[in-house]
Image (cartoon, rainbow, N blue to C red; front, side, top):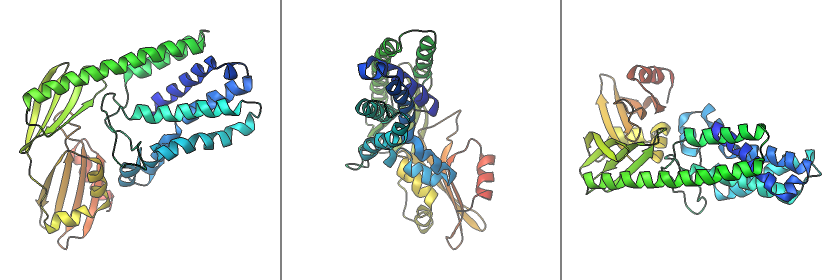
Length: 326
């Protein structure tokens, strides 16, 4: 989920913790648990700082090791080591338990996004992405804000957020059923599909679709149960030409290929350089595919410039390539 949603989830979990008698009976425990649940709801995303280096490192590592099983076990200990010295009267066991819950829930809810996490590391490096909830979901964020507002007005936080989480569980079930109906419709339209990716949007009834069979890629959208195929591309295997093999060694393209499961490729030859472009088919927006990786090579197949990330116009892409060396 996005940072704002994780913040309100941390606050809500701190309010829910007041149902725990050990928390409610001690001001030190109550205060420390609230601080810890907010921090615990954020700390797995500490790898966001990798954006300051470059997109390639960020794409390769975001929601990776920081969301792994060892990290989920380690983060609560790190947070307690920082927080507990300021609240020595707090119940240490219950402080750890609620801190662990906040970290675990952060990683757990991220699994339901299209981006997913490597939550099974070190046992598997597979990305776990159920694709049911958008990175920012207006309903989930809104109901948390509503619960916090009701708490401020004087309602019992434990009961308030317990009821809120019951509603959210029901909402997740509704999203699961909605996605399942879309999947059935896609399989009806493309019965020989070998892979189907259905990604949520901020709108409850709208979904992005990327699918493939042995011959074609299909890009579409769904509104409620109605599926529309918007683009079709011939599925041409990436050839092992010297140009493409040289481009694959570039860190930006390598990061893209480690992240994107459905893409098409292009190679353009100019007077004094080659340009290799890979285009992710999952994020079609207004007829444009904004998530790309581009590598420019000179005639000796040495990299001149490269970029991976989101660009919403060819002009902006050209500008990035002109100022970002490989």
